Image (cartoon, rainbow, N blue to C red; front, top):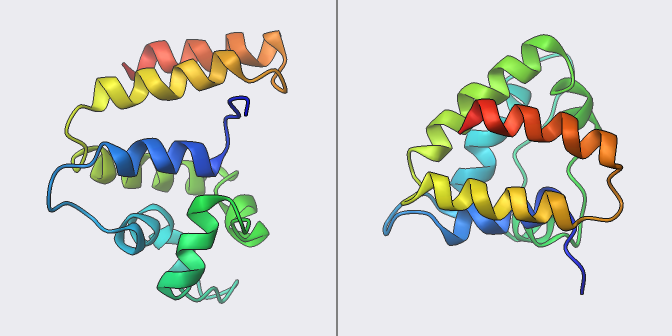
Length: 126
């Protein structure tokens, strides 16, 4: 199986590298998308644990409403804040970032131009 940079692979890295006793899958999903669940105009409910497991494992997709919301400037800002909370729960953030970066470079579905753009963002995040 080839590496693919997607929600499932990133979530697996984050959850595999969390500190002992840190967040559960459900807490991770809730922290990550809390901004979306608090929006009154799109009426999203936090899924049950079995549904979250399916989303994290790649068997189901993240809601399109969530995806669209986090593509906005305010959504992107909120997502960065959520990631900072989640990164506090990871035992070695730099190792997790390196694993994600490796998947980025091995994913043949991403163009070289996009890889360069994302690499520049990665360099600023490290």
